[in-house]
Image (cartoon, rainbow, N blue to C red; front, side, top):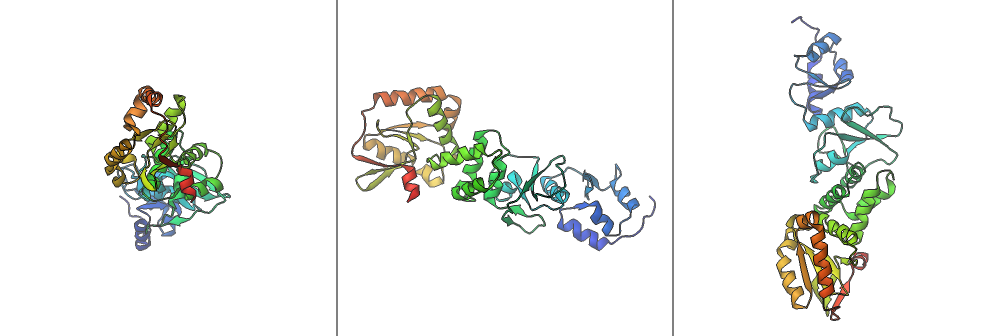
Amino acid sequence: MPIVAGYDRRALDAILIEQDQVITRKQALNCAMSEKALRQRLRPDGPWQVVLPGVYLAQNGALRYEHRIAAAFLHAGSGLAVTGLGAAARHGIPCGPTDFVDILVPQDCRRADMRFVRLHRTIVAPKTYNDGGFVPFAAPARAVADAARQMRELTEVRALVAAAVQRRKASIWQLADELKVGPKQGSALLRLALAEVADGVRSIAEGDLRSLVRRGKLPEPLYNPSLYVGGDFLASPDAWWQEAGVAAEVDSKEYHLSPEQWAKTLDRHAQMTAQGILVLHFPPSKIRGDGRSVAEQVRSALESSRGPLPHIRTVPAQERLSR
């Protein structure tokens, strides 16, 4: 191999350490690396590889998602923050895998989308979080809202919102604020998911139950109301048909806000049954996979109920949240 001109190795190494082994052409040349030396590294069997035009990974092998994030941010040039699923995952919010990296950029950014990089122009500067690296990440609520705008299925948006709220990474009110100030395009599913939460639907499976109720043309229940006997709290069932004295519970530990709520499921059932409430239990898989059967069971329970239970006082979720 021919000898190539020297370069500032210390400066180059510092950049690679800071940027997860990703570097731009301009940065390499600014370290006094010659065009010839750069070509040597980027040859087919060389130690570097091209990730994006003018953006390189200083090692061989598979491209990890961390490399994609660094490369995308460098490609953006004037990037404000990583957002969407990449940022949500960085905050510890469970979400599906993605090959895309979403970058918030100013309105006047002249760069274009490239391969796995999606640039989102914004006039609303994001609150950012930095975990010690050179790439800033949008705050959880912004990341979730931006990710939801890229989704096409309500179930996906429900899952993301539920995960963020249940893990206390973002509140419903923060997400509502992001919905209000963010772009309207692509926001319909997020708006619907937040409306469900405002109605008291607090999990993915409970959202599926709501959809099933409407498809089956069943009477609309109250979702997650508080039930009282006298001044004593009784329970907060997932769905409550007050006029029939019928409650429905979605029995899945992963969909509840905390493990303690799952542990109290049997106690709630016993307490509600003792007060004359007819309690139905459905696993999420049953609601999704055999909705017709679930609808028929609910309809049968409503038709055979003993009617309202006057001694039970109901406080809808909306009234509880507004206090």
